[in-house]
Amino acid sequence: FKVARLETTPFDGQKPGTSGLRKKVKVFIQPNYLQNFVQSTFNALTPEKVRGATLVVSGDGRYFSKDAIQIIIKMAAANGVRRIWVGQNGLLSTPAVSAVIRERVGIDGSRASGGFILTASHNPGGPHEDFGIKYNMENGGPSPEGITDKIYENTKTIKEYLIAEDLPDVDISTTGVTSFGGPEGQFDVEVFDSASDYVKLMKSIFDFESIRKLLSSLNFTFCFDALHGVAGAYAKRIFVEELGAQASSLLNCTPKEDFGGGHPDPNLTYAKELVARMGLGKSNPQDEPPEFGAAADGDADRNMILGKRFFVTPSDSVAIIAANAVEAIPYFSAGLKGVARSMPTSAALDVVAKHLNLKFFEVPTGWKFFGNLMDAGLCSVCGEESFGTGSDHIREKDGIWAVLAWLSILAHKNKENLHGEKLVTVEDIVRQHWATYGRHYYTRYDYENVDAGAAKELMVYLVKLQSSLLEVDEIVKGTRSDVSKVVHADEFEYKDPVDGSISKHQGIRYLFEDGSRLVFRLSGTGSEGATIRLYIEQYEKDPSKIDRDSQDALAPLVEVALRLSKMKEFTGRTTPTVIT
Ligand code: VG1
Ligand code: CO
Image (cartoon, rainbow, N blue to C red; front, side, top):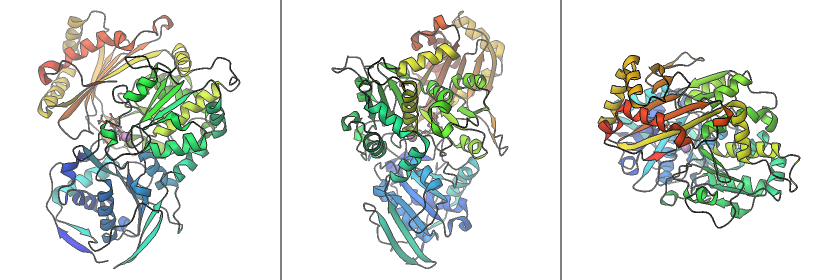
């Protein structure tokens, strides 16, 4: 093939957000839009690193992925990349890409040094919905801010990109290697099975035999919903083929370009079918709900864990996994190196860390901040309130891993107990945890697609207000006398303990005397308008008060939050679009 240098001009707004660049498909399919971003990434990585490299390119299979893969292959060839690895049909979950970068050895013994993940995660897909792209580094984790800032700078000045225009499209539907000759020598595209490497990794972490026993025991029933996302490709292999679950326990497990028209977001609002099956919907299901239910998002890095008629908050989930990991999961049997959570995630994990005397870190929202801690051997288990849970087996959050972690805990707690006696259920495990550590009532209100200007004004107002605790407390007292005093307020700033880098403006926090917290931040993953996230949390140690409905328990704090932020005045919204 020949290398063409094509002229181009910059596009506005190609700034990677919390997790890559996410835009409407109609934005991405503009001539040169994707090309500019990809070339800007190659330039940020520097030609020395790109030349001769082996890179992964795949994603959650959403609309436009297949075209994007062909474009990236041609650009990689022209930029001197030696090999491109593609999951069959262009499918690899985000955690699988991370695993493949870290673990996979190619047919010719090669190893990858990074990769492009094509996903907009939990955002809907299809011609009128979202597409996204991000670059992951050699450690398998998202590019750090140093790189994403450089990419963005490059997108503002880009003048040309390199592409092998005459390279034919590569068949990505069958596994195998296709080789081409270019000006710098051979260029290979290797298509491989999307699940094998990931399945192998999972088998090295968990005791599959004990999970298999649990799944085949008479009184345990199971259900998994992939929401038409890429998780389906892994669920079939792992839950059915390896662990012996019934095929009928899988819902929506065939990946679709438009996720069946839905939001592939595993929460109580969008995972409707699963929620109904688990007995959490408005009407009662016909059959007795399964003992355990779970869902993953479009790219399979998020997870929701449910018990029979019972919801596990993601903040509790990571705390419970951390508390039980050493006993229940072979990978952790030597102990945890430390634990970490994102700032808006509830402090349930903090309590466990204190109890077990573990290193503990609080990082800004987004998985990229956990990677440094893990690379430095400081953190084993981490999580976010946004249905993200994971560990240092890779450098992304991992939905299927979280499900296997919960199944391992259930298997462990029911080891002696699989022959008809009463099962220790998901709900039992959570209630037991609250009884030991106290309960963090938690909820998040999202105001999606509000006017970007109004959202900014609200945040500016909160930053200003935050500097005067006296004023804040007057508003609090004037709203609810049963809410405790604000003792601290700030804009969260993070200094990475490993590389010393500083990330500012990571959300506004109000900390109350009794441990309650209110956090406000703007989403960095949306593709239109702005999304305001409001996180509300209250700690309850008294065992007689841990059984309340969380919306009831949090109602006073919610009232205070809405009043403090003048939510209605700024946004015109009286209710959030999503409550989780
Ligand atoms: C959201 C979540 C954040 C998560 C990010 C990426 O970001 O709040 O916790 O890491 O999505 O997850 P934001 O900036 O919109 O609040 V995923 O599954 O979309 O890659
Ligand atoms: Co995701």
